[in-house]
Length: 270
Image (tube, rainbow, N blue to C red; front, side):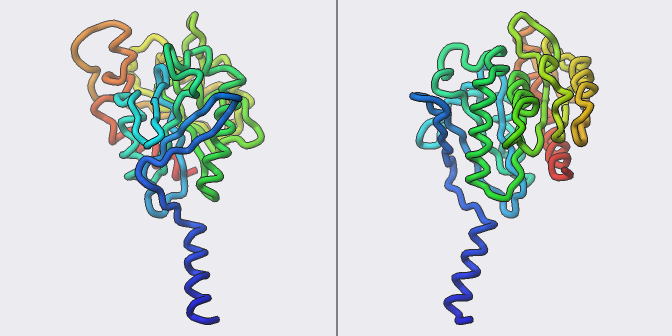
């Protein structure tokens, strides 16, 4: 083999395992007529084997712009820790609300349980696999975002993610919907990690709900629950607005690195 052919072969093989990405690369899908959905890629760590699609809580309106910048959910646990996950060797991608839910209440509790949302996530997974062939694709949701990840785990069979992580998971019935326990969790076969703070004070995400979710995952390949303590409950204000906010036990305040390290290790072990 000539030097030139050998060099070209080496470059070709390198292209199969390397995924060069500009800072703030945007992945676009069009789930429905007249609707767009953007996902934002962070830097791709060398040797990465896993991609994690992140579903922030609340309204989920990340508001990703065409230029790779974004405006929303910046204090959310998953949004603010995505660089820590990347430092642990995981490719992180922020999932934004589709354009028909980028205003007002965004992705509500009830909307995250719909078949339409399931379809959007399925298309997103396919797009990510196209962009990162050969890498495992995980979904991770926090708070209301856990409903999105659980929706995919329970309802996507063909083209399902390789696993999901549910943090600060909604496990309490409310008039707004969104309860992960309302899904057929016995139908979930992929690995699931339920990660929760023992002292989460949000009424929709009690520790008892997290335990019940784990118990319902009877057919998951390696379902596990990890419960952490410590950190800060936040300061200032009181009531549901604070206890369900990101600056509290609900958002793993002041133990972010500990939480990220534990979740990253669990994903890599599967």
